[in-house]
Amino acid sequence: MSIKIKLRYIPMIVVFGIIIQISNPYTIYALEAPEISEQEEFFRSVEAVTGVPWSIMAAVYKYETNIQKKDNGNPQFLSHKNLWGGLGNTEQGSMSPLVNAFYGGIGRDGSDDGLADSDNFYDIIYSLALWVSTNGKNEQEYIELFSELYNNEKAFKRIEQFTKIYQHFDTVDIKGNSFPIPLTYSYSYRSTWGAGRSYGGYRMHEGTDIFARAWTPVKSTSYGVVEIKGWNKYGGWRVGIRDLNNVYHYYAHLAGYAKELNEGDIVEAGQVIGYVGNSGYGPKGTTGRFPPHLHYGMYKDNGKNEWSFDPTPSLYRWERAEKQKKR
Ligand SMILES: [Zn+2]
Image (cartoon, rainbow, N blue to C red):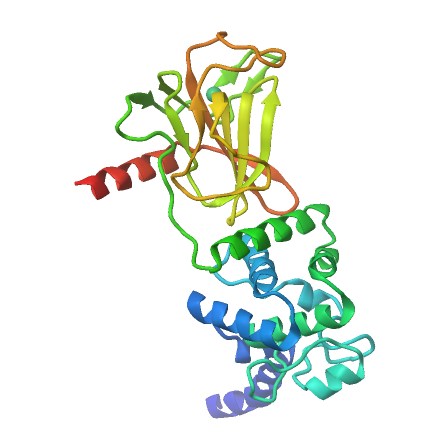
């Protein structure tokens, strides 16, 4: 009796097994992204073949990684556009470079195993680079083609910024942070993020205030690109720096800027960008409305929205790391 029931279930189990296999073809071949040094090597070898600068492919991959909040960024747009397999190709997960090419899809083999796997790092990078190199004429157009896929006006600027950072340092292996005030100067701070502010109507305090004497140097906390520099009625003389994790670092109430710091410049973590002051809360040039301090804000951007988060835990971490290094 019990054996009969079990036998009856076998065909169902087989059918379900086949359905799972068909509906989920990618999981079978899913591969981890390679190590960062290996990624860079591949970006460079793809540049040699397609002419698309390695820094652009690195920037697109990084942009995607930020959106997905994952360590690797196989572009999501590949799965929901007819890009990989081509229009009219009923099997969008097609692993055949020839079938993809027949339908006008971009999916090719970059890993040299004969398969065009839309979940494989090498296949994706090679296919995308080949595609933009045949549809665009220069760096500007390559970046435009990618940003169109994201259907997001910020994508172009971000990919352009990341490309510039990678070009400047000539590597994808860019990491490290710095506490914004040199530890040899006196300063004090506590968590003041989220407190109320009254100037200019009620606002939430989107940052941490670090009190220090006027003209104390202010260092960039991260590697990045200067996105904004100039006067703002709340922040006074301020600088905004975008890093590769798509975090915007905001330094406000400065007394002055480091010499020759301009919008579009690439900065290193620990590089002096300005000096503590008490500018702001009024028309251009207003000072003295409050004691000198650095207002430091951090904003995260997921490609669609931007929001402030508490920088205090990061500040504690960077401060502690620098103190340990000095010992
Ligand atoms: Zn503040």
